[in-house]
Image (cartoon, rainbow, N blue to C red; front, side):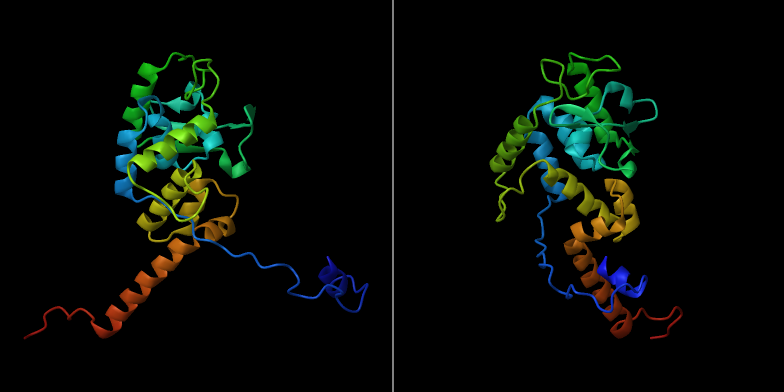
Length: 235
């Protein structure tokens, strides 16, 4: 605001707010599960919650968005999941941002898991919640978190940081894996996670980007010091 008053409006001669007064925020690398750890996790979580955990990990949607899914949002014919709403404090609401309203493909494993989940479900009408409790309301997030934490503990997966073993761990793991598999494509990561802008993606996955930079440096070094021999070279 003061910079605008100085540079554009010329209302004041100098900015009374000195640069650098804002406190610096230290970014802490959040842990993510590896592919093999996710496979083992899906084997030990309660059967009625397995499809929910797989949905988070295989689509990257937020916990509230997964809880907000209704059977009308799950298209088994096209094998797509449509994110149209979220559950916040037990109430239906719109997704976090405009870019959060999106479609997610169902990979074969997730497709089969959701089919199995539907067979076990009591509430199957189009307007019924996919991940419903015995009352028909969405699962209790606390119970889901406890089940996830028990499964992680049973697998011997622990973290040095506090409060990183919650539901967001699966979304973060999804984002990290896709980031690696797409060669560090920030735009793809942004679209996958439904972030409003790429800055959020970069801030969240800085540690993954750093790993990619290390691999890039190694490839550059190989290209310079150990380039492939030209075709047709005679030994």
